[in-house]
Image (cartoon, rainbow, N blue to C red; front, side, top):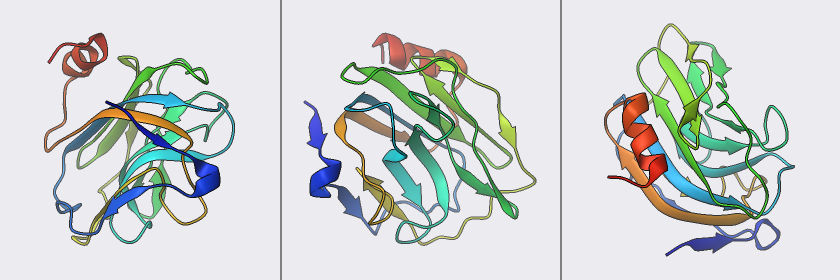
Amino acid sequence: MARSFSAGSSQYLETSSFASAATLPVTVAAWLRPDSTSGFQRAVSWTTGAGSVCAASLLLNYHGAGQLSNQVLGGSASVLPTASGTFSAGSWCHAAVVTDATAARAYLNGAAGSDATYSSATLTSTTYLSVGRIISTQYYSGRVAELGIWSVALSAAEVGALADGYS
């Protein structure tokens, strides 16, 4: 079953007592059906404070229309690896981001882009898990289904199996 979110209605789900963001690696994956291929949106974010520094993020349209990225604060700057391919508005796609202590990657329908590397992730233990937004001005519009979070860096083959519908 999917949960619908409307950016215009500021809809989101959030918990402030999620697992420690200081504990890496992590994989976040979900099926998404975005309403638009424009506008900066975060379908899911795992942050170190109330919508602040990201440990992992299903970030839509940052580098371009229909693109999926993962934003992680590494050292003194964010890294934003982008998955290969693009998604379409009104169509389901599988999105996954993998973050470990020195690299981040994003997958769209099982296809990864290039890794982004950094010296070390700058994360604290205070964490928020948000579905449908990151901060009060950045909301997601669309559906989210089968959200999963793993405390391991899933391999490309494992992410591909999720995208193919296997467990």
